[in-house]
Image (tube, rainbow, N blue to C red; front, side):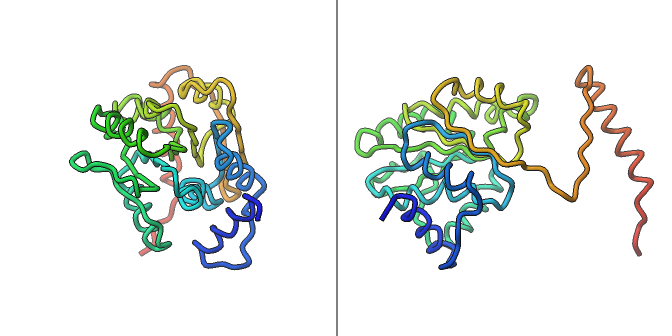
Length: 235
């Protein structure tokens, strides 16, 4: 059985849909690039298009290796816990008071803890006993949007302390931001990029260039104040 078929069968098993197919060519190609491990992988797919499978399937197919999933928001960690439990996928939430186990195939760590010395030491020690195959970063656009209010998230990209494959996931990254983010993660060569349009058909997009952050904020306030008068309150 080919690696592609193994991955698809595992997704069918997890979602309990025997006739399921790949959501898109981009999802399939991103999965293959992740499992083959020859390059870093950057995947931009809309919400609901199967990005999370990139953070789950490899941990179930490569049982002699460990996958690390870095999550920047506590609410997202809770969502992953719920979904993994529903799919009966074994995982470990990193706790600095406990050692990692060689039986752990999927380790979830929050972005703030991933910046701390105990995590780096723990991961390095774990790598001596079991190969760390991938570090997957969900919401990988976070460093571009949090520099003003959360230091731990703005340093999110520093998680790559071990020389392993990086798999970056995002549902919202304009093409113009791609070079900046690749430079932020120091992925200047040997990166496999898989992108679909993340525009929502029900939304109208208006792009305007602002001269400064202050003008951006004031213009946003103007738009909100202008639009709020168009809504009709329902009793």
